Amino acid sequence: MEDHLSDETRAFVDALLVHHARRSAIVWSWPSIFGYVWDVIRNLIVIAVVLAIYRVLNEPFQVIVVSILILTYVTLVVVSAQLSRLMADIMLHIERKSNDVLKQLGKEQDEGSTTDFEEAGFLLEKLQYKSYVNGTFNFIIYLIVVFQIFGNI
Image (cartoon, rainbow, N blue to C red; front, side, top):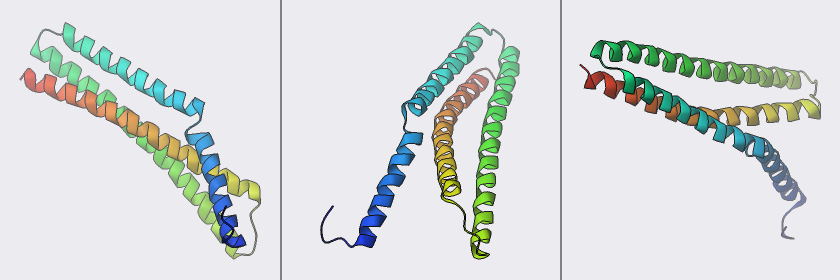
């Protein structure tokens, strides 16, 4: 680093670098990247199944019934994913607030709990990226269903 930086600034920059390295180790590690790739492959398989189902349907009534079932499936997947993400967010927020209260009462938290909160935040960020991938594919499925319904009305 530059010599003109104060010790306080140097410590801050070092802390940022450590934070970035720990974040990258969780969010952009090889197992995480494999998880993102697996989500893409799994969603492509789901889209292929949806398209194959529509290919064998002959009557408009069948298309409408299957479309309602697929829309129900997509809705349940989206709602359950968002609900689990929201629950994790709430739990982490409650833990952070309770630690803030303990700090105000003069009880310091140990370094391990701070690290745990930071890692939990990184895991939530990883889940957010996965939800972007899954949400995009769920939207594609939704568009396929809508086009099938309007094509058979």
